[in-house]
Image 1 (spheres, helix red, strand yellow):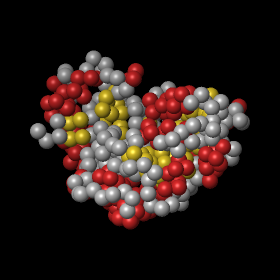
Image 2 (cartoon, one colour):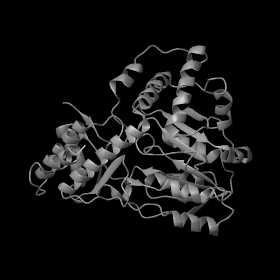
Image 3 (tube, one colour):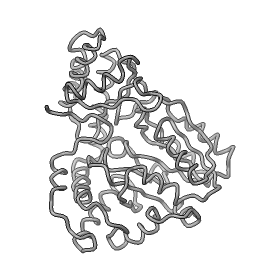
Length: 376
């Protein structure tokens, strides 16, 4: 059975990248590795839209999140967490684990962070060290206005730390221009790689907090990564096959161009939303992102939709997390997902809904996708 991976991570890996993982590996303390790492470093600066160094670590995205907490703060510090979903909440969980006091500027899942609420929280808590938030909340499909939040936080002594794990590459994000002090991401979303690599970049304002941090750390000590970066190495053994694949990933991203990728994802997102509405499904996100679209589904069939799609038709989409399990479905349109993938995915989704008793006129989803795609 041909399979379609339409989840918001992991994503389908293009053949050009997958083949790089099959190449013979080389030692990581060599000039050969240093040259590869140099190419990656240049490409990552472009992807993050920053002039600052971007460090690569062997970890999931959560590892980079923990690095962004453990290196910027000390036990007893106070931070603001602006969350709108499961992964925004994770910032608070990590921080509390290190004895950090968390002030919430969060909203109900499905809603977007209000910059004015972040501003209010900063005024009420002028002693906070940082604001932690999410760019595109994968669990709900919501996009947050990081540009506006960056403008607010930059006028204070606090730093802005953003989880851009799912949104980076696929949706416009400009680290330096938007005054974001620290950004983290990971390999299994827009980079079109297997899980296993994470990325972090800090500006000078954030580095001042690093120098003041008193939290003990070893593997996640960012100063080690900075030291080894200078000589084209990582402090610990990297997953070499993923490093080789990452070099190809950033090459492909640069070749296509970020603006073109942003437009590609925007078009697919628009077609996805049109198809969801054609199926009678209400969009769940107040401000939908360009990476993944979430829609409410009947609670009695929510879990069955995802299971039947995967097992009967070979189409993998994501369901809801936490309290949203069985209540929403999430259909991704990032990475190398193409127009044909959308048509196949929604044709199968429509059939599953019909099989589960939903009254739909056959062909409506595909027609809605075609209507959007044919305009371009």
